[in-house]
Image 1 (tube, rainbow, N blue to C red):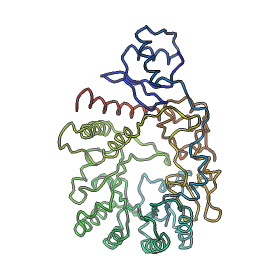
Image 2: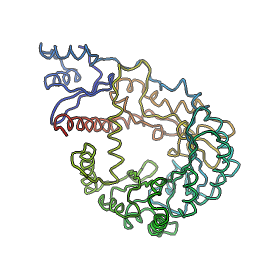
Image 3: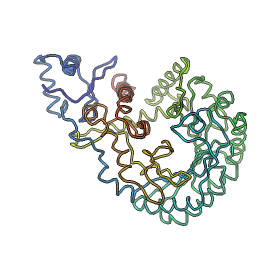
Image 4: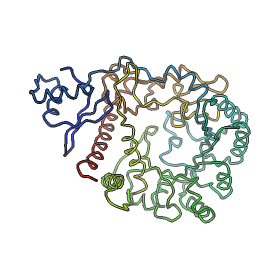
Length: 470
């Protein structure tokens, strides 16, 4: 029997394999599981008649295929020029590199890090901003819903600049569903800003890392004082004036430093000012830092327990169970992972790891100089990540290079069981001015471990509904 393109999984209740071709998790008995284990480990093994019958039945239903990709190439490669010419979805303008905070974990605050820019006084000119809006208009012809976002630094340092760009865009994007967004540290979020945002289809992401003793550890003004009091005072004023209307506009982003107490982080959301606002939680990103993120044992213990509570809530095992807001993102990811487990007939001949998005297609980031980047999360000092500019347009070849990072490791990707779920991104693959095969391979084990964990969570949710009847 040929070695099938699968990955084996087990739980306390049963045995499974993830069929890469079918994109499906299949429950099998222990005898079949044991046989497949030996087969995948290149052991000489012959199935019993009973096991052979079960394997034959699976094969007749198109499981256990050994089919793999014949060529590693992103399926949108042939459409890339069209997508970047007529189907850009979002424009992100870096209106300023100035910021009134100096957050300790911010990549722009790391003056010893040469892989990213530092805070500066550079600002986008009105000419550059309007040219970027014009470029977006010309390259979103086939996009019905478009978004223009304002980014920094701290974009609200230039609120009047933002208002002028909004007016210019509204005059230009006639007939489209035009929306705006901005990301702010909340210290400059006034009633004037909120009134304007409500009236102009804005979505605002605010930053709040927990109660005062936690928030002020990392999020400080440039003079070293904590920003919590100012943030909460602004939110209190807005809550008093706008009430529940805030949840239509505001979303909270919490950067979780896992050295801190997870329960305390979540305690801030018991405040009436913040109740019912959508919350997104992310762990401190250390890629552009020389310091690695460290996790306290207490954080890990409480974090995992709250994920368990979140799963109970997701499957409705306990009525009216309230989960921590900072777990919501993870639970939503679990649900969405299950929704994407759609059965297919098999792998195509040409494909690629699923991680890369269309560089610049989903989130075209334009910095203060008018340079183009695939999104706001990549290095602004990288020539590899710089995919064009306002004078020359988008460099399709450079965009294609970022889209097809799977070509760095063609042989490894073809035989990797995790390729359909891979989260690989070019952001972390640059070494010495080019995308690196070694950098990519160094991430593969971690990514596969993460995907296996998601598959096991998927199995758990299925078992809760079938075995436990929840």
